[in-house]
Length: 580
Image (cartoon, rainbow, N blue to C red; front, side, top):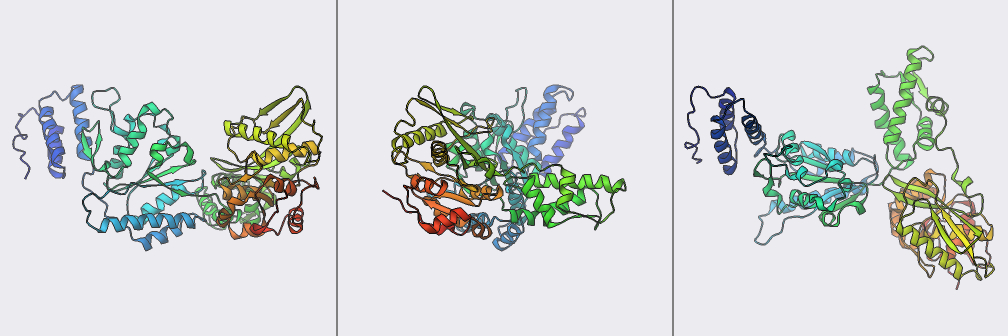
């Protein structure tokens, strides 16, 4: 029993009406003992203040926050795995592995909750983090999960969080006193066990002196968040029932201290087939309804949608695709409203080009490698995979290495390794020993406004330089990725699925990959593997054999030569033999 008689004092007939209202609300809310004592003490002090004073207004706001929080109001949602599986299956396309990993996580949480905790038991310290490019459905997956669990869903954008006070709250008495963002989200949800999406943990402020990584751990760590202290409230709130889900575009941008507490779920980009299905089933109906079209007034043919995907939206997700569908629908609405076209119109490829203008990505990647000294490299960026053209040129000048295109430190080192390897293999390449003597080697990666880094361009740098020195262009329709060592070995790199999908979108049907990445090919959709020639290599000699018509000194398995020249048929079982 709470002893509240000492706090409930009569303050006279001049008591402010809202003080009596607050006292009435306190009696109707189930508060923890410590919070109830704090509320009663502050209400007693408030009753003696002038209602018009600034101090009384601040005390009233603080009391309303304490009373308004759902201290013990769970939604009652439970993890019915069969229901969750069905809800996630009805979500975004192409994320089967991610859905399986989420179900495994929930199953483990459910098994841990059903048994009594033993002495010395450590609570689960992992939090789901959905990692992938923009527009691939990370927020949609979290929202579907909350719906399946029967819980409220709240999204917190962390891109603006710059210090710990925005998480822990700013204490009363300061100019900008306010509860932390998590407490505000809990009050908005109205339940003590919502699903809270922490969007963009990789976009948090980079200032490590701000203290926000520790504040994030206080919020996420199950061993501590059961007594999360908000400085504005001046009280502890139990966050143990909250299901936190984080999102990020890149794992490397997350601080290591926070990264260790996260369980990463990779959400990859969509294939063309998946984008077509999403557009047909979700995006087109949504945009037609949002723009006032009635049933049968406007529709998109499959070829029309495929034209938008191929010529207007080279992206991993579907945000740009939906944006262009909306633009096409609105411009068609203008024509229908003006009587220039009839209702019941079907938008095909020709209509798309009229409504959206000239194709944005009409340039064929094969044309870029028609001249010697250019190789096509597959890279990874936070928005998804990307095609980068590596250009090399050797000029008569003093000996130096020039690198342009906003290259990061790792890519600069790859360029130095590529130059060193070629210098050591000039004779075997059939080149003069003085081919690089007292000459300037210039590597350039266009789109100079975009920073570029990573080891994936190592093999492409060698291919571009050898192509220029031999004046043999790299085979058309071919892209490559892989890290290079000084001995010429090709090491595996990451994000193979995104890179291969990007090559397919750019019309590149032959891709040279490190043999160490062969297990990653299982992540590729069947329709992509059937249409792509994936050449697996161990050494840079194999890369040069597959990429350049010359030199003839390198031996290549005949069936792989045919596969590279025809652009089809080798698949992941291709084998290139290293020649000593």
